[in-house]
Image (cartoon, rainbow, N blue to C red):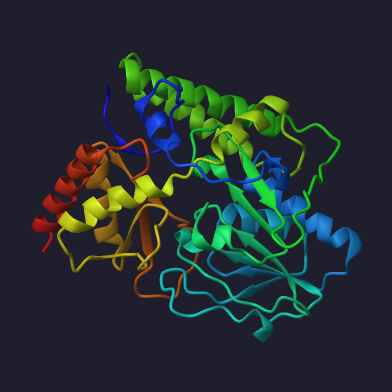
Length: 352
């Protein structure tokens, strides 16, 4: 096998040890409580349109630190957008939505890295939508009291596209779709699907050079950003999402992170974003200095470790604000985590 850590998923088959490891941890979710969409962007748009169909909404509140592709989409569709302050890297304070919104508003709460918890009144408040893309099957995801929740599952599982929507309070399926064509989303699906197939060949068979699957993935991502509809996915796509979404990736992440945290050397240059009793989206390293951040990122890439710079388009008025995520999911065993720690520790020793 070719070895690398991070980056996009490759296709898994039932015979793969990675799949068998993931399948050992299942959550008893009722599939009848969930609706399925191609992307988190599409899902959120459908939720808002569903709420607006029967309610007059004065303002839609977004966190000031959020996925910029979603923010751009919502700003394109709606004019009544407002922003509220939030700390994406500290989790000691609970957001008080009543301090800025009223019952004629929509408030979107983001579960940052699976470490957020929310507390708000059950009635006489704004409509609450929780985004659990980086916290699928986290504490807040499983115990939400929101009007609607959604999550983009392609960030968690080896599927080309796919997101879920559920209504914790009513248990009613959203089933709100546009009866139209969306060639952009379907072409994006095909290109990203092709990239997972090509990457599998690269990882498992060593038969392809990396740029072939990366190009397909980048082209698919570009098409996805132009999709502004919320059509129902094809039946085979829904079946694929259903086959994964009850499989809990968090126990394996927890095990891998425990290995990392036991052996990683401390550095004055980064902080590890974590929360006692919670399993984060991945290994989250927060930097203060961009040049140092970039040198660390380049060092990792040179060693076949591919981190993600999370939401660089946000203007964060914080001293510590450059965030890297490194995937530590079911694709990786303890040997891989030891390799990751070794390379991080080399960088730490060379950058005192």
